[in-house]
Image 1 (cartoon, rainbow, N blue to C red):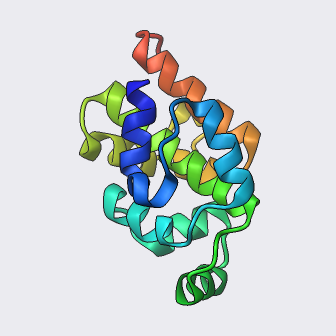
Image 2: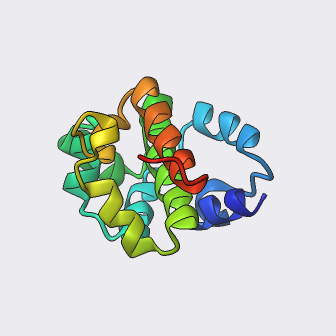
Image 3: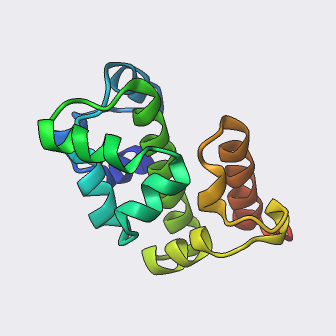
Length: 144
């Protein structure tokens, strides 16, 4: 529950994502599409550049700019990618202790991820699962 509150706050709060009570409730929010202003909120919350985020998630720069300029909703696939990025950074913050450590971890090559930076793997479900698995191993003290 606390993680959902932190995730909602990270993504811009109630005015952007509503008031989901569980991860499960994010499904419908993602299916209907997040508002484009979520990108600005996530950039601000993460202190990672929009270029870095959209490039790693494979959201075209022009597509992101167009969605923001017209204030249209993101497509479900784009919303899912923003959710994954947000979920990983919020989880990493909880496990590693603060946002700066989480950001550093996300942007640093990781041997447990075959030398990839975690941010580079979030564009696929398999990569997202692998990144979350490494975070949980860190949480439980398993070498990662």
